[in-house]
Length: 136
Length: 136
Length: 136
Length: 136
Image 1 (cartoon, rainbow over the protein chains, first blue to last red):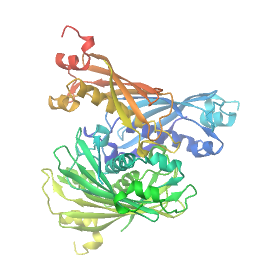
Image 2 (spheres, each protein chain N blue to C red; image 1 turned 120 degrees about the vertical axis):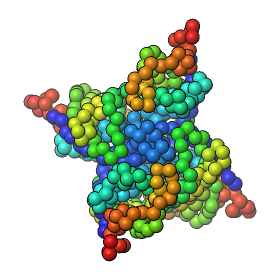
Image 3 (cartoon, helix red, strand yellow; image 1 turned 90 degrees about the horizontal axis):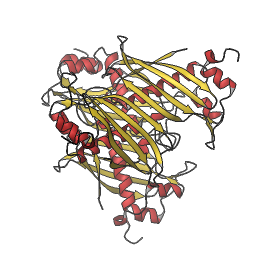
Image 4 (cartoon, helix red, strand yellow; image 1 turned 90 degrees about the vertical axis):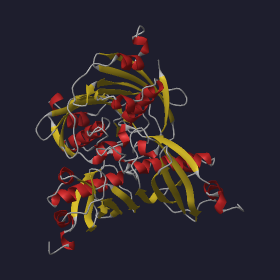
């Protein structure tokens, strides 16, 4: 399951080179996974309310074509893996012409409020990655 | 008393127009007041430890000349007023040639952890604005 | 004429205090004026194509209530003044409950590609502030 | 050769979780490579003046321990590889206690003003990675 969200590029996203600053892509990734979880019926704010936090343990982005001011960027987001105490999101960014701008992923641990790793609950796995767990 | 701090402009601060994005100046202001308080012997982190928070209630910036990539910007910071439950910081930004780039101020309330306004303690007023309160 | 745009608050907008960082409001203002101009049929990108730039000369924000993670913030934007070589935008931010979070304005000069002040053309004034210029 | 730079964490770098936002680490990486090149006698601004741009083609970061407000973060930067039309920088971030907070790398192409890939010149390779090219 892939969820698409859009981000309009503002001046504040761009840099001196006339393109989106490389660090801003991680903001776009966050928009993507927020909307993914909302679309799955479990906004991240709700996950936090249940006492679970999913801190990023690794992020990676490949930059293929520059995004520019006023581009309407589509962030395609999916879950690559959700098992044990670990979630991996995948992302693809496209411009309005459909060109692939960037692709990446983020890995997340699953910890409780005391920072201890805890296994993802079945309903969270189901919400994150239904196709991985068809029997749930 | 005016405390000077420096910020090196990175690509991430600039925008499409080849100059520092207008919102980034509020980051420079924060650097300025952090270093002001550290120089006065009372880092903001220590203020928080005492249970006090100084949320911004108003910010204003006049942009006079653009700051550019790799400029070493000096932030001059002072306290315009520290009385009751309110602090006002003033700022001036200059480039290496001494040109005035921007000037502004931020106003802050003084609240406890429950969000209730509390008067600034005499030692905090003394740390923030010694010249205002010579008898303290 | 007031144009409303929305911004979903992400983690990247918030700070240590659990609320949106004060500098991010200037990003929300930019979203507001971009969408204002698009709604008026003259996206800022198109203004630039015509050789005009509207750099910010002053920004001001009053912070009334904190915006928080995952809030859907509405930015109400209007033009307070558009005359000569100067434009002033006004902004109000509200949360989903309609509470006023912040209000502010930005002032902009009007310069050509060489940085020289130039008067706003009648069609730009008309696009920005139709109610100011009913005969246009 | 490893060059160390420092960044003081401000509120604007942190997020709702009380730690530095994951996207801000790419800003710290940029500070590191800027200071690396300055220390090697060839600031990036000077590279641009020569008509060369080094756009990021990939970025990766592993997050090991959180950086927090007011931490003085040290960014250790080195060149992993500088050959052909490609440069790879490596980074390690530490707090004041010496704990490893994060590690990562960025890959950069080498293009001219028209966006065409061009080989790194011998003096640029020498400046970036002297140990790789002892005969230069």
